[in-house]
Image (tube, rainbow, N blue to C red; front, side):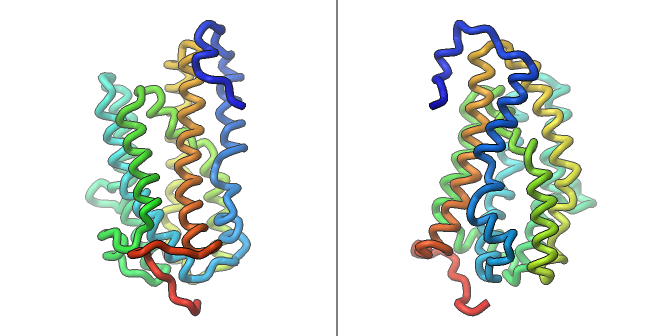
Length: 253
């Protein structure tokens, strides 16, 4: 069992190395790289319809990333923090001349064979996807600024997963190759963002209680990512019960 945050109030803070190691331990245990849905993807066992369901539902998450980042940015009174953090919004929304992550994900949706309009309207997205994604926006809007920033530290682990995903998607689903630009960009953007966020959290978590809150925030974010894949697995793999109004993959793929 994880000790409660209150148990840390009177204890000395962890060393910087131990504090950082705690984040990596959480990622190894809880990051969604181990989810069965990802295992099926990487083994080449997803049909086109299942990949369509994944791309469609994941788009809803992608579309809310700049919204949650704007919420985090708006809570800071530090111009240097805001200057650094607003890069994330540009990375996803684009800058008016270059496409951002949202546009690139729409191209992935199209590569699966779905129209981008379906993603833009949210037609067929699982109810559980909406709840999980909104939970993330609510988390960064209502918890402390430290917790909000710490919740972004799943990016510490994303590069390894994205590298594997790109290799396996090219190997097993070559017809998706035209839609992989999003992942190529994140190979550099993610580590840059994680480096800044980790350094900021380390500097601002002064007490053992604050360190515990930061670790708990990362666990919460991992749970949100895992829950999104749980919803896909339940609806489309086992037992395969998509709720009313949800996207229905074609039976033959």
